[in-house]
Image 1 (cartoon, rainbow, N blue to C red):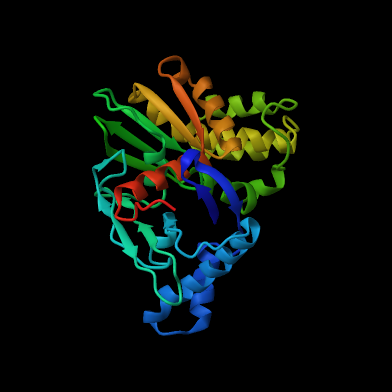
Image 2: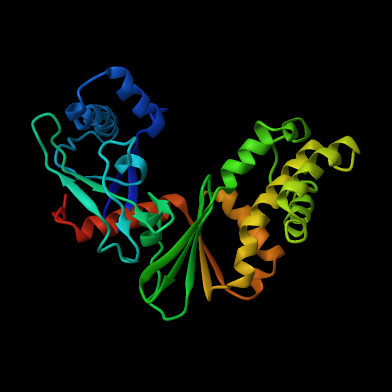
Length: 311
């Protein structure tokens, strides 16, 4: 949880814990309370974090709006909200939201933002980050690329997000590198620009364009068996394989521009992959941090809601 000053989106204080969405959902199940107590249960957890923020800044935060996006509106979140169907406005003006009024037990108004669905796909959280990118209204197709466990490619035209696809890139990489036979052939550590890591990453990206991922992945094992690559080099080779497999779809449908927004390490990997594939030569790529676009997106949706009183 972050306490953010609206002007300039300066983060004044932060409170964090291991109570992520999955862990909190498990705590709720263990509590064995009636379903109608679910929101109050989540309010209790939020209240603890608010007290931490109050202590950090030395003032009461009783009436400050709380904005929640991502999995908080899912089946395992605070309160399930229906998805907003495509398209949606990139200024955040028409996303599905629910406002929870203050009560004696939780004195902060809450704005809960739901996710978005197409006929075959869903996302929660990335739609707010897209809003935070500040896309220009243009007839040319632009792409929002959010790398992660379930990477999102969202197509934007004329101020509307009109289509998107999910790629299980991060999850597949985690399974292959930690749970499969390849786990013994890779070793996490080091940065992309260290040693020969970038060379092996780019080799993986290029290999992903010429052979099936299911075959290429086994080469991680033979690279190790035949001592062609160190375990760390293999780690970057495998990363290049899965990211390159994701990004190859862009070659047949290049956007006019790309906004790449996410965690710094992933941004570095995706920029390298897009450069290796030649995509960066044909369309400009702008990068933004995950925190930046999340805060800007949440503020935009908040400003479009009824909770617009300054605090």
